[in-house]
Length: 165
Ligand code: FES
Image (tube, rainbow, N blue to C red):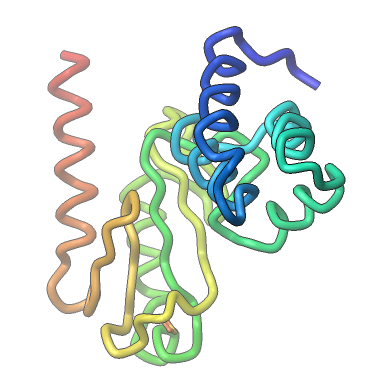
C-alpha cells in the first residue's frame, strides 16, 4: 500500500470531521473523499470506519457497491457512458467507442496522460434522455444526436493543450 501524502490525510480528516455528526455519515464522507481525492484510499476507509463506528469491511462494502466510488486514482475528468438497456438500444455502444478514441482512455480505465477516466455504467436513471453520458457529474442526454458530450470533451482537450503550450 502506497503511503498517502500529508495533504491527502489532512483532507480526509477535514471531511470526516465535517460529516461525523450527520445522519448517514459514511456515504457523505465517501462522496467527498471521492470528489476531492479522485478515489477512496484504504486510509480513508479506516478513518471513516473509526469516525462512524462501523467495521471497515462495511465501509468497503459501500465503496464496492456503488459505481461512483473507486479505489484506484482516476483521471482529472471522469466520463461515464450508460450501457443500460434503454441507452444501449439507442446506440450508447457507438457513443462509448467514439469517446474511447477521443479521450484515449480504455473502457473502465484512464488515459496515459491522466486527463480522462472512462467508465461504462449501468442505468443512470435518465432513460428518457437515452443515450446518456456524464462528464464530471454533468449529465448529457441524446448524446448521439447533439454531440454536446463530445464537444465538452473536445473543449477540455483544447484547454489542456493551450495550458501546456
Ligand atoms: S438505461 Fe441509460 S439512463 Fe437508463
